[in-house]
Length: 434
Image (cartoon, rainbow, N blue to C red; front, side, top):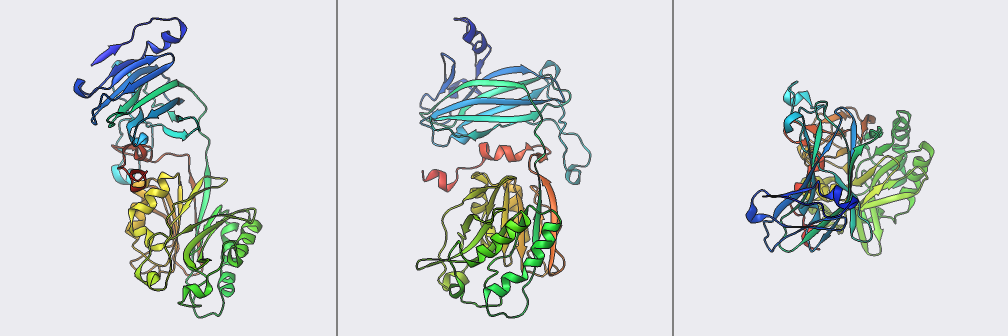
């Protein structure tokens, strides 16, 4: 079904008249309306509703282009899935073109891949119901136009309004490089106090900082290992002695540090990871959500939140050890904006760490007590495809890797999978509960 709107007014409608309505099948088409400067789609009471406004914009191949629009959803259960922008690159005669993006040759050799659609992200939720949707992209060399679709789908009675739609040449995104560091240390022998354990990491943090590390990840429960099996006996408040110690090292070395310890909050004791920043203060903490039987039997309480913290280089989430065995934890962190996940971990399945990266499009930094020669967890830095790009092989060592958070990971046949996750991933439990 195709409906071309007529030009009824002067300047405003001349622009909107270029938009055309369409749907995969007429029986599931939404109701299309144009009101003032709004492009509106409404579901007629059909849960399978699926349709869009579309328009082509001329582009110059090889140059960066930015899409921007404002969106307001009404009565829609999961707007991220139902209100979508899709951008398709086309060459002459409306044909698909080859992508200019770099594809990992380890998987597909040097074969070229067709340019896949782009899915701009929600970048500003706003306070009045209007959400900014935006993305900046490098047009494929052979592209001459971009076909933009403003979509409504999968809602029984909801509607969406779009306005202020633009697609224009832009500045290329700058590099956003960050040096990630993982510490590989076993804390051998026995000690009497958490302070003795903390001191063991001071030279390793200095070594990582000398390598330019922006984020340094230490292992789980570092105040307990070799000191006591009774985690509650060394639990402390946050902020407290351990965060003050690592906060001072963060300030000294102008970096962020993630450390693992037990936190006491009233009668509750939690297994936590704490992020300290360059000003020496606590940036945030994460309370381990999934607890193994050993921690349950020792009276540890589970956390229930998935916080993500803004740093000077990007957004960081944290999870701890057993969390890696469950896809929900990393998915919630990624959905909350995490670009990097820090993983203090005693031991675990490295294949699961790899999966958490690939399925969420995030970098991960793990620090473990497991011997590198064992077929088990590694102290490593993992890329978005789930590959280890650096790993510690000797006790008392530090490994680093530099990554560019603004460089897309482009998969053959999928395109920018990281951008597709928000639009196509299943409804999360936390979303369904709202």
